[in-house]
Amino acid sequence: MRASGRSDGRRDRRSFPFDNISFSACKPLDAAYPDALVTIGDHIRTRRLDLGLLQKEVAQQIGVIPDVITHWELNRCEPRTRYVPKIIEFLGYVPFSMGESFPEKLKAYRMLKGLTQVQLADELGVDPTTVRLWEAGAQKPMRRLRERIEQMIHPVGEDERFALMAGLV
Image (cartoon, rainbow, N blue to C red; front, top):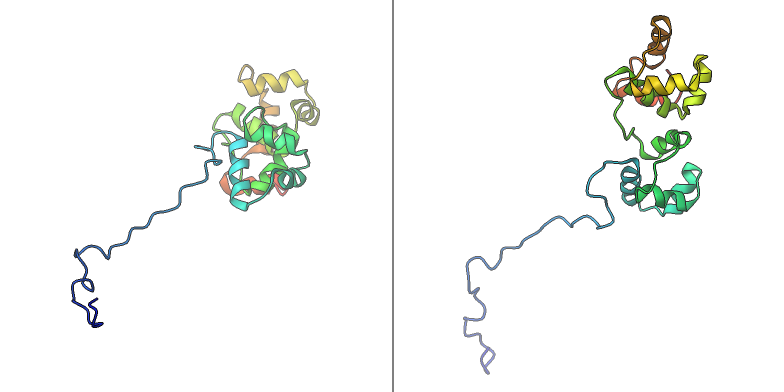
């Protein structure tokens, strides 16, 4: 501006035709988020951060102490089977594949129900070692027993996972 209060015009004009361009970008995820969802602990950590919860709040929902959540999130250990139904409830989805083969489906069914191999063996009236061998693919159940097991676990598609978990199937 000049002393007289009039503008000389140069300062009121933009210097470059592109100086009114603005840039925007998505805010990067917090470094606390895992790079990929590989383990159940990764899923728990991501969901907890998305909801803005503390580990102790998640621990209360699942029924463990906060240190356990820390160990799961840092992948120091995997959750025990009995906690999987509560974890699925917290996540709102099943964080693992139901599998294609009989051994994979059997293990997924057991995990969804929160059963140990011993508990599933009791339910089926077989030895726990037998269940372990079935899940490892080292043995197959006899035809009648296999049909009974497949009726329990099949078909378990994407939409039926929650129904199975909730005991509706």
